[in-house]
Every structure is written in structure tokens, then in C-alpha cells.
Image (cartoon, rainbow, N blue to C red; front, side, top):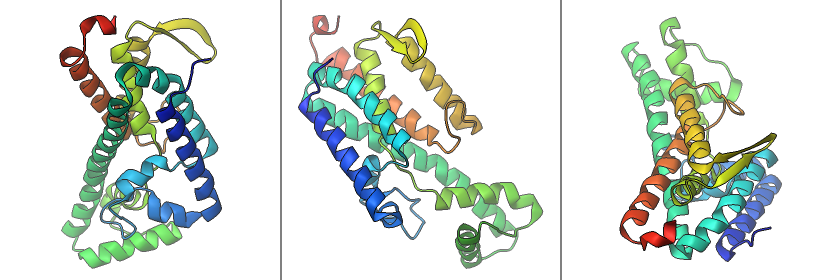
Length: 249
């Protein structure tokens, strides 16, 4: 069993403690610490950081923490604590930025459709708040799909360390591209570059289509993409410019 590095151990403990605390506190924890759409009344500036330690379920935190344990310690031993922490949190921030960008596109589309239909901004906000309370809304028929996406963007908070984890996993694949890895129930080793690359393609497809191929449909696919891209680019730069090439064999 591989040794867990101090930084990874701290992150594991912090995530678990926050998860347990949020379960005790209840919905107020989500209200204050999940990342809400900036136009939502629940949005606070600190949520861009705190949402990385929030998780929606036991399965959600388990798989994130399993990936952090599996890839994080090896990567930290290779690149050092400071670079690891920079990579982890910058990937999480990049994930949030990309997810919010696509969320804004969904929000803006529905908002503009209702403005074109003669609604005022105050009427739109009242409609969204009521829809989130009751689960129902009434809008012109030709705007239903875009308004539904707008309400989802406005009222669905983002939680989880997935973006940061994807950054770590992508960086791992850059450092150890040919390391054989095993998937659950598949007794065939797959090189890290193919496994991580394949998963990235799936997330990219899911982001564009809104189709959840793996797991729940309520997944921030663009956060995964954003974290992976940041992790790949940063590690590629470090590997190319700042380290002895022999160290990466």
C-alpha cells in the first residue's frame, strides 16, 4: 500500500470533516458554502473556494477521495508539496470558472428569450424564485426549454472537489503516461494516457450534449473538463521547462 503524503492526508481529512459537518448542519451549509450562480442571492465570494470541500453524497466524496489517494500521493512525491497545492487549487478554480461560463450561457439564453417576450427583469426573477419553490413555472411555449435551462443554471449550486481531482489525474497522466492502471471489474491494464484521455473525451462529449454517459446526469461536466485542461497544461509546462528531463522517465 502506498504511503499517503502529508498534503494528501490533510486534504482527505478536511474534505471528510466538511462533509460530515455539512450533513449535521443541513441545507444551510449548502446555502453558504456551495458555489451558486453569481446572480443568485445565495452567492458569496468565498464559495469559489469552499465549494471544493463540499460533496453531495457519500458516493460523491468516496470516489473523489479515492482518486485523490490513488494519484495524489505519487504526484506530490514527484513534484513537491508547493507545486501540488498550486496544481490542486488552480485546477479547482479553473473548473469553477469554465462551469460558470457555460452556466451563464444557459442562463442568458432563457433570460433573453423572456426579455424578448416582454417580461421585465423583476418578473423573470420572481418567476425563477417561485419555480424553485414550487417546481412549476408558466412561460410562453416557445421559451420553455431555454427557461428550464435558465432556472437550472440559476438555482443549482456546484459542489465537490472533482475539478481539482481531475487536474491532479490529468497531471499524473502527463508525468506517468505509460504507467498501467486497472479499472474496476476490468482485469486488463490500460496506460494512464489512454485511460485519462478516454475519460476526458467522455466528459467533453457529455458537456456538449448534456448526456451523462457515466453516472448521474446532474454532473458539472465542464468543471471536470476545466480542471483536466488546467492540470494538463500546467504539468506539461513544468515537465518541459522546469525539471531535469531524466526525472520524468
